[in-house]
Image (tube, rainbow, N blue to C red; front, side, top):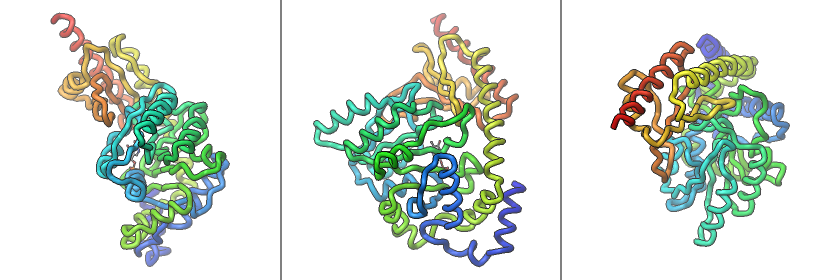
Length: 365
Ligand SMILES: Cc1ncc(COP(=O)(O)O)c(C=O)c1O
């Protein structure tokens, strides 16, 4: 809060006439340049301003891509499970979701190929494929390095765009994340990947600020849309303020602090799960991000566990809503990002009590 206050005061003192006006449609140039340099440093990617547009967060970026690229009835490939709010955006645009399962190595690219062949035989090709390759929401898994080039190959062969939602990329707790799909696409000649980033997970979601990277001609179509023409670029005042924070070096040190904080919370939650959960429950061990995905035994449904947990004062999300076209009733998503270490310990202990109780009840019946 103090850093944001200082940054916004500086903006208001030094350039109020710019920051409080409609902004350029593409977004504030110095902030785009900062993002370009950061990506060049971290991934060795050489991108120009023309590859970028700033957006009101990731959700807005996805909506913009859909406005530009989707017609009602178009097929969109989604991960099963996937982030449910993006599934809602695809629904807004009348897309037909086709699910491909995720395992511990992320999107199952072999299954994807089979789906593509089947779609092709039916005379259909997907328009987009939406993936969250790093520390996925809701499972926490990361797309394996050896699956990534295969995914790029399929996008080129079947002519669809990959929408790479990489909002958790910076929140790695165990070293390097594999090369991004954007980087691999560029090596393969480019043109098949939209990559999305956001300040939501590394600064604050209330800022509503993110970025979309893609082929210049497609990016131009997006920021020359009617909504950007009438409204100017996304959130100009916030762009100026965030730009101050980034250029002062604050963002990098803040991300480093977040990594320490969240790594500790993840470790505490994983340890508490070992101690308190029934042996029949399994879960993922994310190397970054916010989430752990529980698989319940057959006797327990997510609805029953979530309702009982809620009554015990613990909020967890049933897995059901993370599937576009699949009735799954045996998964639960836990988030370790928001809670204190003490709350995590108490919450997992209560969740464990609830599960043991439900299992006892089941076995008596
Ligand atoms: C995978 C994923 N994408 C996007 C978002 C939302 O991003 P934004 O706030 O930038 O719209 C979230 C938030 O939970 C998320 O988990």
